Length: 303
Image (cartoon, rainbow, N blue to C red):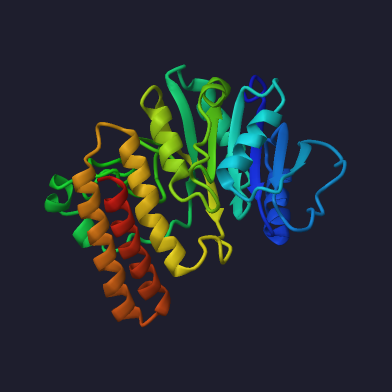
């Protein structure tokens, strides 16, 4: 079944040796082991995975001084062997269930050439914030949110996908556990404007691919995202990114409304203020402040 496909994974990592070893164990224990894994490491100290490994997958290890998910993934794409006709991305804090790779390959065996990419199904997806508000007809009509999973609205905001009982088609895919046809990643690369934590780089990449190809989330290819602490940075930094990165995404595509984007970002700011009052956490206050600064900076830059 899966012998006709050669599959490689690119893993961008930084200072997470325990998570990386856990991911490696999950890849080695797959019912269909990947053919190649390219690790692009921006850690202060090299990973203990460096060096020859017995048996598949073939391990390639690249060191870089640039700690940026977009840059690291692009470097990994350059290093993947030409034999790989499917190339995937995995976050270092992901763990695949035992049959996940086999299920993904089974999907691509029957997928036509119009399917460009597919994501693994996150089994432990966190609950949606404010689901009653986000799933109203008013929110959908204003372009703030949508009831359909994996949609991208007129404001440039994406809807969450969540754990799926069946395979579904989407407008975007999270890159933390996804697989793409080789011709797709040959013609599309990650926008390195999204640096550091690279918030929304997956939305930008997958939405761009989705304008030419169909995208899916494969229900039977399950994984768990065991999120490591500290990835987003502090509350202020992430709040700033929430605004600036979203506006950058919206401005790239004429089908989006910048006015609706700003309205949705203002709603995001209000939600963070409410969270700060409800949860009594300073991080939400800092995040709301970052949102405010981002809105002001963005408005001045777009004049």
